[in-house]
Image (cartoon, rainbow, N blue to C red; front, side, top):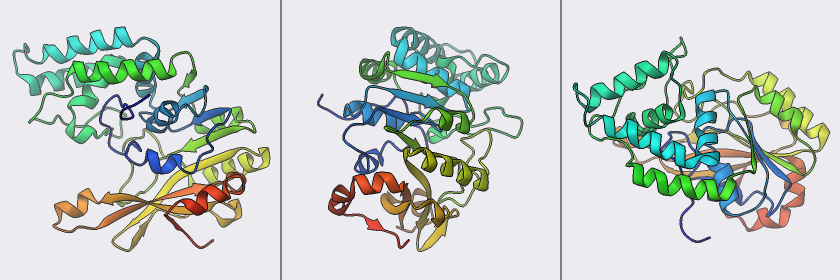
Length: 302
């Protein structure tokens, strides 16, 4: 299939731009891809686009996100039509398109967490940046300069993603350790867990954090089971490292991926490049040593 890898909607923190680099560290084929912290599943979509596997587990504690992905993949016609209705209503709303956003947000927080409402909030909010308050409510503001992604563009991407993945995905909104329990040798687990990150701030995309020590212990279980995994976890910008490195005892190899010029630095009048760390499990490193030698990225000292 030709063309660019499709995506449903802009989502801050998505690995869509970095996906081509991440996929360089994956085998060309494997039994199944598991994403315990899927977000908008950019890596799963990229893997499907390259047809590296026919089986996926997409999981995220943010259940409305999972429902949105399931609707996009399994019932794209329904999602496109319902989104078109919600999106079009902003032009008829008595209080204007900004107040329409707040109306949908209120309805969402009161329980109408439908795929089309989730999609509309993502398409209309500032920089596609998901934010939740301590009470668990979606609290991001609308981008007042725009009306969100046009339904025609949504439809084109959604239909392509559905074509690639329909009938191949198991969806869940469980704790990541439950997903780990499903993993078997031959599978590949890709993880982008909530972490401190290069912004030096809590990751508000997630409704709850992940304890560092618990996460490290859970990774040990994958090592014992002989399951391959890749983790996007910490990074650096302007010579400063953000996030705690994973324990060396896990025997992962750490690489730094060029994520481009930092948006925050640009706002401050600087032009600092951000590097995001990628941890590759020992078993996967051994299988792909020849491939890694050809990748012109930096390997951290173990």
